Length: 160
Image (cartoon, rainbow, N blue to C red; front, side):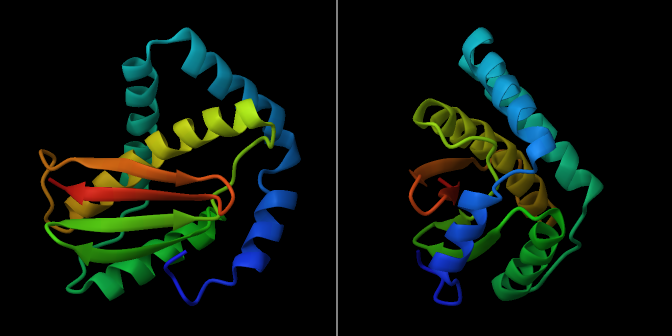
């Protein structure tokens, strides 16, 4: 975890115990399972990215002059969704976006893997749309480059 303001034990306890509202747990677990096992990988992840893009388009952030201001705005939006938090930093020729403590519907090993795949695709759509609001390019790739099941974190790179 690179964000020193994050109390790891607190968010892990919250997202391990209350990681997804009970009325949605089974539904989302089954939906992710069916989508990721029945559809081809590109089709499934493309659909989930599209859902993320639509969500971000309905929750526009506005434009910001600094990464710190953008990070605050993203965290405000994520807090309202109860979707964890994010740390954004420049590195070499890309941005590193570390999303931590996102909700997932299950804790079994197989379901965790599917949940991470599904959530990372949704967040790719969300972050691509929000970065494009800042003047980014749809041609610049944003991709998940690391997952950490223990910390419930996903790391994305925006750039080449």
